[in-house]
Image 1: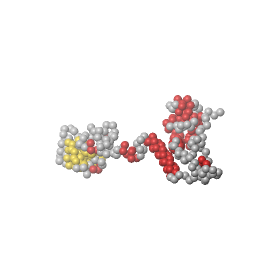
Image 2: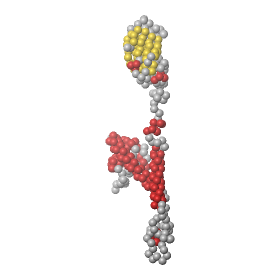
Image 3: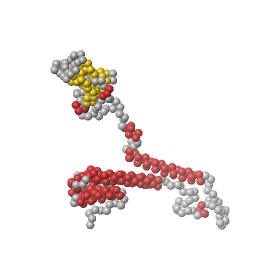
Image 4: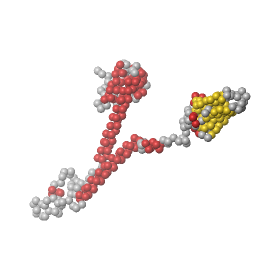
Length: 323
């Protein structure tokens, strides 16, 4: 006798195949549902639902099952992705069906048309010809009676007016149900791209940029500041261009993360000066202490390192630039 219950008939074929695959893996591993829950971290109740097709297993549970049973998770995850799409399609069809049922019930709850003039309120059967004709239409002593009288003038217009009113109310009820469903799904924000755009402001210079840990500026906020103290040096900096001036090495240093460039001079001597020029702005650094060999300028914000140029003026009078 099999340990598994029959899978629900309404399951999508891909979901059915996936659930059957999970069952085979559990059987092959010789696991009870309790042992499976203990070794995967997902509850016994959850696994009972996953393996009996009442709920689609989440991706994490699928990967955990693969690890427990020594199965390659890649193939199992591919099967899960196909089943997940099929499950979503089934849920969408179910939601549409339930919505149609709710609309139908709302229309059925609306009041029907008023009874025709002369009809009996005590019976639903069609009135007899004698009942349908006006009481004052037959002459006394007439055996057969006159043919049925025509409805009163304007009666047809009133009936058509009632039908139009009923149809309008039915349409209004359906629209209200649909609006309620949309409000429930979207959480009242309209669900549209326009609402999303209103919630998520477009990037601008006033929107703070999320910076890596230790980085304290980006773009224009870096101009005039020290690269090292702002966290723009180290692994975040590259040498964009370099040139030798005398015995000194002149460089344009650039940090894409900070969006800024600066000049640096090494193998230099006291009195040597380095400048960086970009966008009509200039920053300068000088070696002032004896024995120092490195100097660098404050930063200038640039979107591209090619827009920055470094120049050096040595104490010996020699000059040079990176371009």
